[in-house]
Image (cartoon, rainbow, N blue to C red):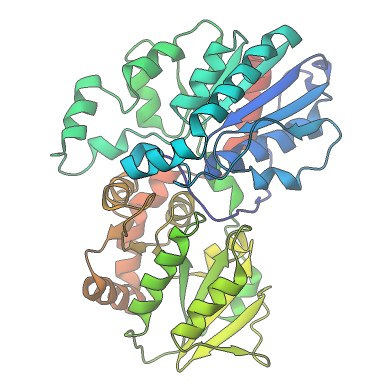
Length: 435
């Protein structure tokens, strides 16, 4: 599964593992990160920041295969740079889920740009590069074909998606036949002697690969390193019912998701005021977002302040919408329930113990099949709703009954794991790839 998420912050955690080797002794390597998705970009950026703090490299480069890699703009170092032929694709990077999206991407130069990036990576073996691939098949293929030693962090795929639930889809039988969601050609690349680390997102996926004599490790889920578990500012809105609205970061699809959720909420009424937290991605057009709020009767408030680092507050009757760019990591833990048509961000609130509801649209990312797969991945912490009526009924129940919230969320929290994986990943990459 390719991840799509709102821009995420980085939660500070205590370093729980003490390295038994001298990190500062490895100065001769140049590193190239290859990643193919927004969630993958965020994971790579955290690892890069940790490496830059601990080791002096000749160069660290990153090649984002999906989008422009805007999340890396926050890394300020003379030893770091983005490379490659970067472009926002019409499909949003999900052309494998749609024939229409694939055709649009072809006309936008998808194959040509990938060939140019591929040739760029092929040159790295001449300059003593090590490669860290983050994502699924494409970055793994790039790393394998480079003739460089590499590590692979396989974040999108999990065997929970086919081993949980009824499992009557053709894809479920296919995965059961293989014994893993990873495909045979991917497993072939993983067995390459130049692959020094294989890191999976959960224990079940690593164990299933181990059964095939593939030395995969589970070190925790790095996605939980980028959200704060607590926030003192919640006291400012604790008296309200609280929803977080996650519409995704792929536009224009995110606007369609916002429209659908606002359409649902106009028919939603509680006996208590409702705060709707709307964290926006860094690529969001705020003017467009505000036009949708105007469309559904929300009025911008000049005197109302919640003091949770919001950019603006909007109100309609007993509902408040709070907007903030790049505020996901601050606000996620404040919500009681999520309305979520997103990838990584949905998984993260599940890891915080917050249940959510999704309402799939036409895509290209958040389709019915994507939503169903995500629900199984998270053990039902996010429930796919067929229509507006079902969503509103479930939303009312979750907001009114804490016991239902806890029941829905408990499996997702277990499956996402605890924060701290990024530190362990950096340590093991240093030990096995860079030593």
